[in-house]
Amino acid sequence: MTQTINPRKAAIIGCGFVGSATAFTLMQSRLFSELVLLDANEAKADGEAKDIAHGIPFSGQMKIYAGTYDDIADSAIIIITAGANQKPGETRLDLVHKNVAIYKSIIPEISRRGFQGILLIVSNPVDILTYTALKLSGFPENRVIGSGTVLDTARLKYALSEHLGVDSRSVHSFIIGEHGDSEIAAWSSTNVSGIPLNTFCEMRGHYNHDAAMDRIAEEVKN
Image 1: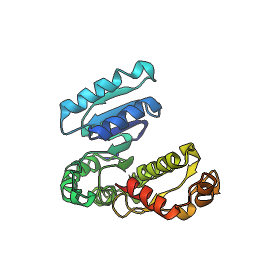
Image 2 (image 1 turned 180 degrees about the vertical axis):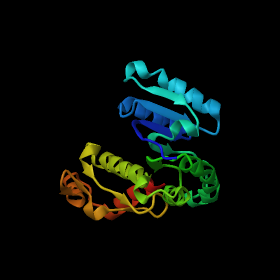
Image 3 (image 1 turned 45 degrees about the vertical axis):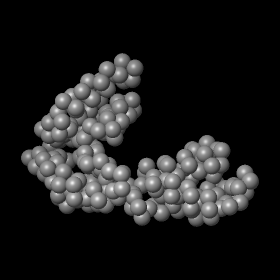
Image 4 (image 1 turned 90 degrees about the vertical axis):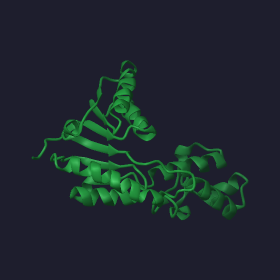
């Protein structure tokens, strides 16, 4: 059975810190008129949905509720944040076996309902789980997207803005590669409002470029 997409409807699977923050942000964004929350703990999803819905009078009209896989089949996008948390001393790769098992219980439930929208994968390790979701779902590659290094890039831009004392929106830089232990800061293309990074640093009195870049990259990664 193929579902018709409702372009104004989104769903979030996983109502932990990331899922709840995502739901709150979407409520404020007014991008959607309907938002469905799912979690293995149904009471948790229901509680988060009600809490966020109580903020609607200060934002825009939206229907927010806890639902089932049947309720999300016609969503334009399903955001998956479900998964085990990273424990102290664990790398993101240590999460693979736990979270692949969780995905094996989630993705088939979505695909068997004829879902035609986009899957956005946020759970860690995000690159591996995006590939896992792609294979489990059988969806085309352009419909299974990982959040990748978006968060890492934002952290890098913020760290550089603090180091240089500038607005983070004027910092243009990217973290590339894996979201995790092997990520790379693309220093060669980094600039501040078009001024190459090292040149701008020297304008601000910073000359120990290599040491500063190593320190900031490590802080962003860890």
